[in-house]
Amino acid sequence: MRKVIVLLIVLVSLLLVDRIAVAGVERELAGRIAAVPGLSGTPTVSIEGVPFLTQAVSGRYPEVRFRLGTFSQGGVLVENLQGAAYDVRAPLGGVLRGRADVRAARVRVSGTLSRATIARYAPSGVRIGGNGQRLTASGEVTIGANKVRFDAEMRVEISAGKLTLKAERLQGLPVPEQLARLISYPIPVALPFEVKLTGVRNLPDGLELSAEAFDVPFRAGG
Image (cartoon, rainbow, N blue to C red; front, side, top):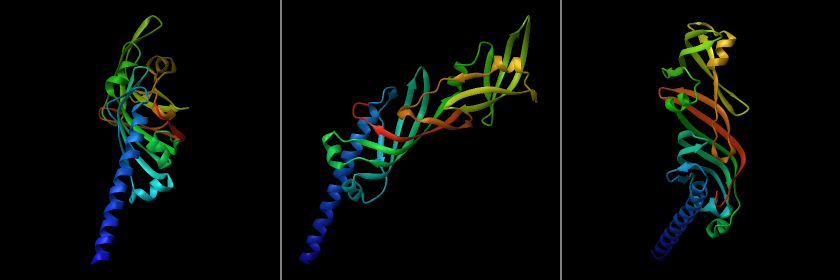
């Protein structure tokens, strides 16, 4: 019986140490993330995997998930920003003292651009709509001395980490090049951790963005 009691005490002690350690690391990571300029709200961080203590002793965490809320840079709002950091290196002693070199081998994030944000950057005379499957543009533009009304489908492109909306079809037909130049436009999206856009998906209320970066530092003070 005494051995059982001692074993229970040891297990409870390890569990308490485990919870204290995970709370300390999550708090430190959340503080570093919260210091990133452009974030609104309080980020939440959770370290995946159990037991945590074995990760803390090694100073390596296979997966750390986070929710960041809204991010704004250059006036572009990216909402519902969330993601995960993989193979995070953070020595426990340094983390608890607030002086650790915290770095992730890979970071992936996703967030949404609202229809209102997308429309804000459209050229004059261009109205943006959509049905969740594809963005559309309609309106009136001036070509030479003529005003041309149009209803076009838009294609979302990512090139070199940049997001551009391009007119693709005009009432089922290819868009003339001159008209396409007037309707198409970029959106200056920026994201934290120097991630680069890798994918985009149409949603009923906007666009869902995906982005990724490698060898990402989480610095104290942002």
